[in-house]
Image (cartoon, rainbow, N blue to C red; front, side, top):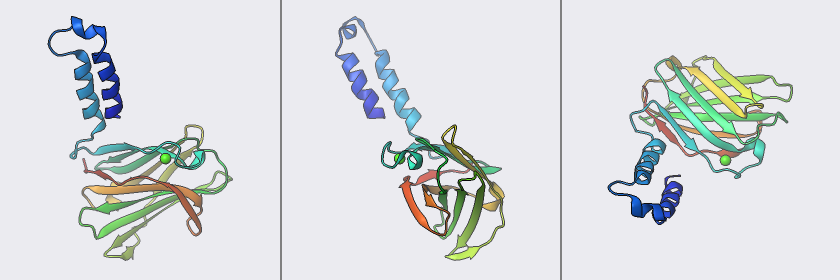
Length: 188
Ligand SMILES: [Ca+2]
């Protein structure tokens, strides 16, 4: 993204307007601002990423993911290119703590009827835990978004690294279709 703007601004710099400008050109400021806006500070409790567009069929194509690692809730919101309500779909993520030995799997399934379910399982050194936490989930085919929200007390405190995916199936069978790179988010 930053490179894209830099290329555009380079083109502007080479234009005739440059000859009328003294000191810092406003386009240079624009390049700096863009770089800052797309690089999330390590200490922030909110982080987002843009996944490749067109690397999966439209209803499984994750385009952006935003994570809020707040004191009260962990909220993961994904935008899908065209979230059609067809078939049974599964969306989920893993959240791994900095210690590397504590992680969680969170899944939500949407069936053709529109009914959804959600499940969270914790693992400590590979041993499953059962926090019995409610997984709030909102599948919105109209808005092309899936939002999952969990009480923050269900997940050990601290920074988490999150990988998300979406695919076909109900969790017992099926295939993930699109994945995102890990997103590390400090707790606010
Ligand atoms: Ca994608």
